[in-house]
Image 1 (tube, rainbow, N blue to C red):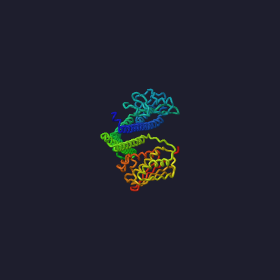
Image 2: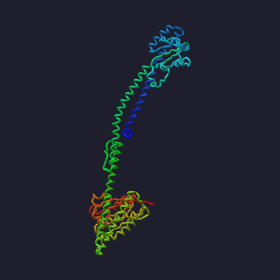
Image 3: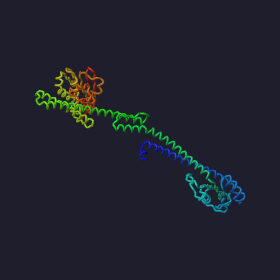
Image 4: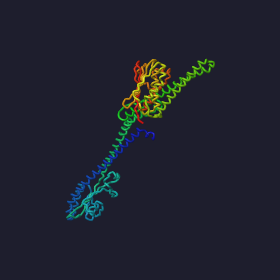
Length: 485
């Protein structure tokens, strides 16, 4: 049972049922009381009007003591008013009774006392026929079903501005109460029918309402088991559709991240395994060929050293990306000149370019004074310029410029190499992505340089884009905002 009502569907259904039930009960009780009060008011008006008219008629007869005429008049009036009529004198003693049972008795009902002692002209009340207990009429349903209830209506008999007697009308309200109870029972029956219909409608409604949530829960369960391709249908409208759309967007992002993670692990493993495998072969050759020629031994050791350098570069780049992903990379900003950094980096790489017969043209139109992390921007310039040298044919030219555009410093590295095909261009900043994989490995590339460049630029609040046309070279543009310390 606890598990059943822990479901949101049954919670919604229970809340729906309680709201309908309470609303109906309040409405039924209010309606019954209003109707009961209305019926009593109508009864009071009718009884009072009949009694007051009769009181005017019997006043002269009572003052003259014409008891026979009074008796006839009371009998006829009792029949007309559908009740028992009693005529009391000023002392509350019964002078005439249409039922001829209470002659000479003293009546002390509150309705009689209010006229003889309190000076009222008329009064009305409801009493239990068995106990004489008076009950309030503001809540008719409080009357017990098993008892017989009668109403006492009184009117003063006045002659010469003096109360000489009281007319008392005793009539049953049983039929009226039975009608009220019948109405109450019918309302309860209607409530049961409405409740059943509401329950069935609520079950259908709650199922429709909670079905997307149930589906979402099932899909979340599948995702928790590693199925990131799971999606929920984006049906309907409103908040549930927005929720499904947002969830699918999140799922797609998680699937992409999972694929990227798998590719990253696979590529990283491959990149680390390649230099290790090369070193293993070279070292085994040195071990099993102790009489190897000195020149060949030196070449092998040189190759091993190069592979160690390559392995160290891969690990360093991986650590940089881990810092970026963990948001632990911090910028050590200082006042610097981007043009000075570009000039220094070009000077460092000029021997490599000269060895390939390439030329590096500098166009430092602006000093590029800014507040940034000098060492990280040096890495940006180095990686872009190094890539341009590696991927430009021998005898090519590379153009490096620093300009200002509004409040941004623009660094441009352009070459006249083979360029990048259109299908590769959107992926050049992806990790381990290579346009020419064989050539990249031959040149010592890890496929992480441009990804690191992009992360550093974004960390500075800048933007980087790649422009290329196959056969006409490539152009990388970095836009960095000028921050003042």
